[in-house]
Image (cartoon, rainbow, N blue to C red; front, side, top):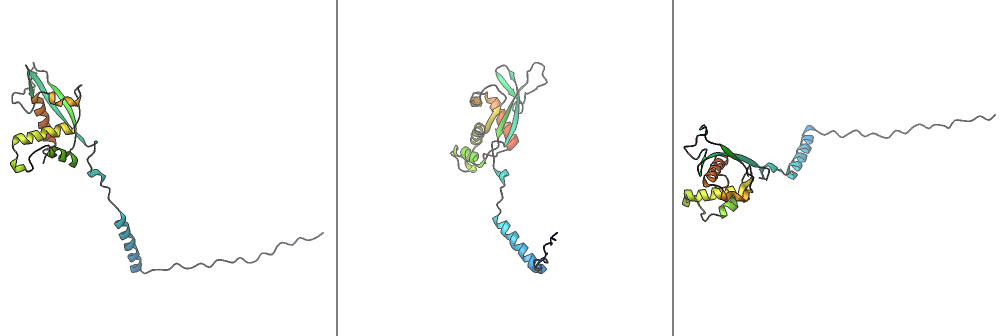
Length: 173
């Protein structure tokens, strides 16, 4: 019988491991500062919340009742008294978009006045009406919002009053 010899195992060669270079604390801080500076220079802020979109809306509600042919509107007429048992108080809910700079430009372009000093109350009211028609999105009426100009003037005045209470003069000045 022949004897089988096991192969000879040579000793393993271990790779040479280099010790990491140790930097001083000042050198390490300088590297960190350089990386941070580079990141900050390349970073741009999105600030996406500063853009006014169609999702940026608010709602107003106008309450009124009919007294003969007249609409008696809460906040407009002193004689508004919803406690009278003979009145049928109704309301209109209206959704509007907050004005963006583009909306402000459109509103102001509709005016012949370029400075506030020359404007009269009637001019401001005209701009408020333009703002309303531009920013109106939906309402609780079963009619299209394009019929805004057909509403009773007291109702429109009530809407303008509620919008003014909600956003002041934004979009006009």
